[in-house]
Length: 493
Ligand SMILES: Cc1cc2nc3c(=O)[nH]c(=O)nc-3n(C[C@H](O)[C@H](O)[C@H](O)COP(=O)(O)OP(=O)(O)OC[C@H]3O[C@@H](n4cnc5c(N)ncnc54)[C@H](O)[C@@H]3O)c2cc1C
Image 1: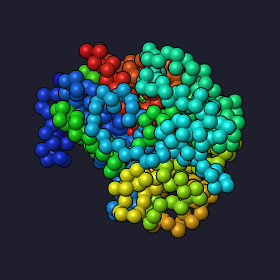
Image 2 (image 1 turned 180 degrees about the vertical axis):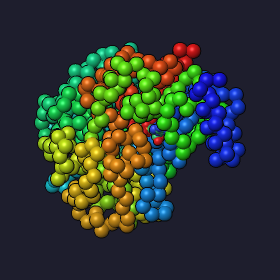
Image 3 (image 1 turned 45 degrees about the vertical axis):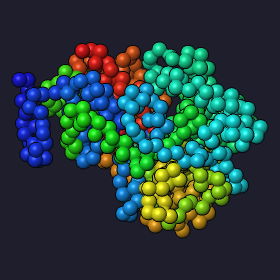
């Protein structure tokens, strides 16, 4: 037995004692997966589906990583702690391959973007209906976003597996030319009106990047096109339900699952020919100690983390009183006004400044899924970007932005719950300094995530793969990092 094996034997006994009959395998595992975010779970299921005996280890007391839901405010109010609008989970190749019976709930409108003066851009499932509301920019919306959406799953697959052969080469080439631009450039070139430009900026700002940076247009185009192609659904009952479905399926396939177990060293893992790590470079460096070749370790050490977030969840005694009632039918709402304002907010964050009027990403889950709150009541979810590691309380700034477009909002608040950068990282070590993207997704780290390689999931340690959002295609609930790493491992035998 190897050293790792001996250490694991002791650990297994400790877990068995802690969990009563934890039903730990006596005969070892083929694969160990560390971390149960959507990537870890997708990887574990891909391996288990191919007949591998899988052990899943999770640091937190509940499985799911970014897919956790809790009663953060009051009893009876279910809040998604992290991810809530899941367009990529609805369409990614990883989730398609798993064919899970996910109960997605769609709001009548995927996205709305209110503007001063009381009107709002409404992004419908139908690109033509969206274009009709954009007046002079309707044609541009159809040409830039509608065409991207019409390319459908083949383009989605190409974008979510950027290192593979493109399934839709022409659409991908067209997307590449437009998407490589800074969002500010594409918005000004393609759109002529304030609403058209603002709508693209609101989508692009999900990237957590300065909108004057390359590829931010691509983030905006992808998310806007997904609103048409797949909608931006939530999971009925909370995102946790998706994680629970995945864990249940893993157990059905014979996988073993242990929560509340933080892995601090690779040497402490049971012997297995495959190890999938749903962690970011910083944790991997710590776990690997001096086992990594110095050159690779230096490259990982250069991996950069991006801005953090300040997140608020509310229990409300009714819906948000939007000036434009149509906004009340949207699942997601982008707050921040014009292209110029949103670009300023994101540029300030990139420079380490807290914006006075932040871009706010807001989700009204009860519009699609009333089960999240007692009858007639609502939950509300929002965050803004802040410099990495920020300890500044952004509650007033976020609520001021909501009041700007929904006067009287504060009167509806029954309770609120805040998470700053430190709290984010405390709950999930992958969110270093509150960076919910597991690393900056700028052009350099889009191409080299976490290092430049044709197979960036593979590490120099035999059988050890990284699979988190710090690998391609990056942040979001799509499971593609885990799926790709698991397929590489299966191919390796
Ligand atoms: C506030 C917030 C809002 C978001 N909104 C959306 C959204 O609406 N839509 C969307 O698509 N995406 C959203 N995201 C992003 C999305 O949640 C992440 O990109 C996604 O969860 C990444 O998946 P992952 O599997 O790579 O890692 P994670 O989901 O972060 O999971 C990693 C897991 O590994 C565990 N772990 C880490 N280190 C160890 C260790 N040493 N030992 C054992 N376990 C360990 C962690 O506890 C965690 O459970 C949001 C994220 C946050 C935080």
